[in-house]
Length: 532
Image (cartoon, rainbow, N blue to C red; front, top):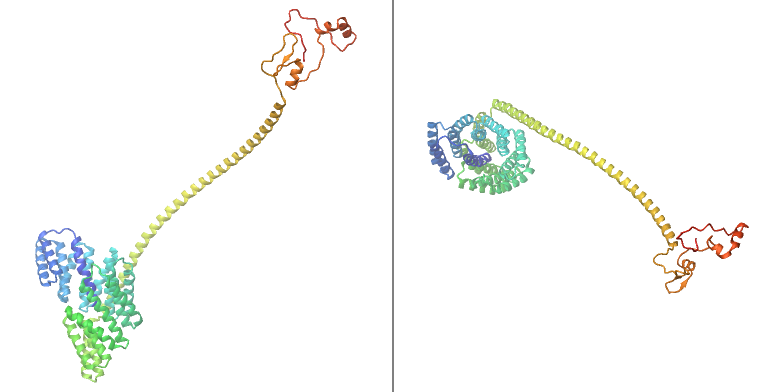
């Protein structure tokens, strides 16, 4: 039943999305007829919807509108599937498969193959179901459609589970769960995978893992999304509640399971879900059998057998027959138990075909090979990307090395320039120190030099000089007072004869220390006086 909820949520939402994004149709009238049928389907008027799909098919066939043909066959098949007319659904979906292959629309082909596989699953034809699921899975993997991969993997895991291949089911469902956890904002696929894992854990006897799986599945289904209708949410609630009830039965607490299962039964009656009634009555019968209520168990199991047969749910029929055989054997009704066991064996032989199992094993191996090949291609792409990144990094490192060398060179030049600058500063400092010393000495020398300057008043006759106070003094006195000069006295050759007369000459001739004055120069303008 979980497969029913998951497929309806996906098939209906994808049908609307496909209607919005599909290529332009060749014929507007065929497109209008198809749109009218889709509106009737969305309103729950399935009879009107099927009639609309047939009219769209008639028009599309006349004008050879392959797009409308594929869409009408697919959605008509989904409508039959919703009404549990699985044989009719197979006919419509097989026609849709043919047109999807011709159109080359891989996404539409993947949806059709998944729905086709679900129809085979409902009929208990696991070989064709898995073949269709694996084809759908290949499409989603090639298209990198993670949502499609998760949903199809869960369908494959459910099929393996019902087929009794629990280890294969565990592996596929775990892969689906891991991928679903990576989907941002898509809670429904994860809730779908977790509920499937919970039901599988019950049959594997891993009871401790079930409560957490169910709780997380409920949480994800409670986060409403555009692809989940109210009916789908109710179905998900029923599935998780059924899992809790079944867990209590297997743990030896059937009395606690009955209230839960009764609530699921009421929901199935309200929704008029024959499949839901068949499954919950099966669990109710198992609970009564565990409590020793033979009559109640027989009634519930018989009701489950009849309901499952009416909607071709052969797996549920098998489970009901097996439990009825066990119940009658414990009650001592050997003949009736044998009849139930023979009916179970005959039905099982039609469901579980060893040749089909071998074909599916080969098909699964091929899918795994294709996935490995695809992973190898992706790895090579990633390797090329990594090589490009490494090449860019090497270029960046090379450029960084060049920049580092330039920076070091510039630093060396700056260090050398700074060193030369410091040397020049030191030399300049030494020169300045020398200049300072020279200036100091010069200032010392200048401080010892006293000069006379300006206008000096002097007597024209006696040659006395008038000082600043107005006193007259001899020239040598004035000069000594106003400079560092000192005078020594002697007699020049002009004044000597005047002073000493004839004695001047004798004195000079007799070895006098007084020199004889030279002959006077006629016309000389040089004034007489003392000479330094």
